[in-house]
Length: 286
Image (cartoon, rainbow, N blue to C red; front, side, top):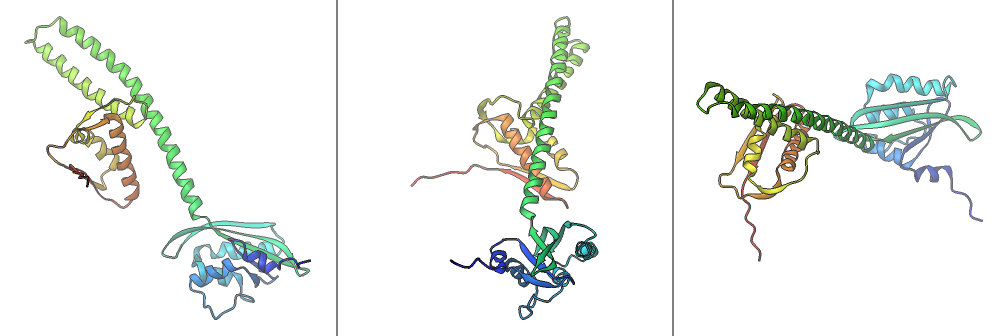
């Protein structure tokens, strides 16, 4: 029969950074992942990890001095049996960017002696996915709210337009009140256009493809885009004259532009400039 793999071989096959510590917090076994992490982050390759204080290695590799006290106290508390497990999530600049790590320590037995098993994992990708999922949920809720408000507003606008049309029937075109009511109807049309934008944002508008002038779509969204971007982001629209029409749904195009603006805003937390540009792209086939 083949002999079972050694503990070192088993630990080396695991992706997490794992170390077995003795009762004084010094490394007895370090797996391959931990060795790679240490070497990639400034650890002298001539120094063996066995016999080194794990806290010393952790601090040298991560540079997370603000969390140093918590880690030192947590490891000591588990070694002394004051708590069963220590877990910490922290972020620190590593490898040219900020990474998020999960560090945990539990008591174990190694070579018939009390020991400590310490694991560290880079959870940055998982945290990024969680943030994106949370943002998507928030945007979906905001879209539903916008759609609901737009429907209610549309109902009110229908009443305003209906009564305004009835009043116009009783007035002569040259009368002062006639012009006043016409202004009410114009304002109603503007408000109706705004509700269409809200419905597009809430994804509750039926798709109606038509020959569309993208320049007009962008111009109609000018005020809303500036509100979405805020004062810290400069907005500019470079629109080519004589742009050929495209077959598309106006509401969907408005939604695309607003989503792009929101994504650009979120990516420029310290301010910046967003430019929307249109131009005819001629394609030739060989």
